Image (cartoon, rainbow, N blue to C red):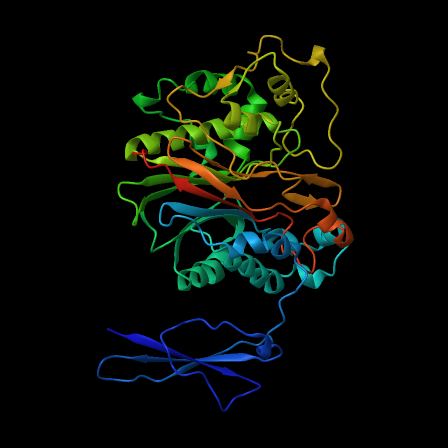
Length: 442
């Protein structure tokens, strides 16, 4: 058996390295600002000490920006311990803004020209994101827009050192980013995980899914060739499912889902259908494991949208404002549209023989979900776009809400123009809620 010891050396005090320890991380203090670190790693067995290896960190330690308004408004929330552990849980969802997008020069100027480009670099933003995560100390963590390399080389090893385990799912296609789920390893153990393209979720439903309208929805999608092509061939959305068993509360299990739905402003109907398929799969897993459900992520949908209304009200029925608005761009959205949105098609250009949009409703056996994060003024704040897009929806059959972390207000961002900026590392806000297991939940 080989063990490793770690000793850290600061450039400002090279004659006083830290004592060797088994801890693979170092938490800088304000006195360390300006120093560069090197880590001396020594392998050993019970009988032999190996040759040490030195890892040099080239960048100096920087001070944590002190003006992140999130820490100010949430200080009372975060300083209050979780009530009634271990039955209470703190859950976080956070779209961290992939470097895949911030590193593209045209987008830097077009979308984030208001801030210094150095504040967009991963080497600046990732530590700030980690700082937010550490402050919130979640039991369960859902991340979106995680660069594949950032998961492998940063989030997975760092969060592992902090007591978490996790799984990752990459989007389909050439986008090297995806979604991740982490959980406290002393609180939960993994039963199974699956990362599934959403376009595959409606295929081959089990017999227990007879109450779900999958055949009629599949027929509707196939009849509309453009919709079928977009959903089955173009959109790379995935959903990550993790079924966990509580280590501290007997017989308690939960199916966590994490997704980042298709972004296009004319695609509300696609996001509604994607949500329905995700909820169906979550239902299948929950029945299989006798588990609760927590649905979370970036749904690219505001509260009145079809996707959110389905989760909150269970139904999006024809001849209602939500249904009409949701499917109003069924014939307008074309794959590859960029820039200005295309005009709505003329009625004479629409094939009247095509089936109309069907009702979308959840079966009675699907548990009621509740909105654990409420309705903040925004969760995404970009130049020219401010909206709530991110949510956490637990099942009321197994969970109840304790409290929700306070929300940012527009006044907190006005002087900063938009997000990200020097103090806030993403264009989305970290959302946090505390929930508890219901005692009578099986």
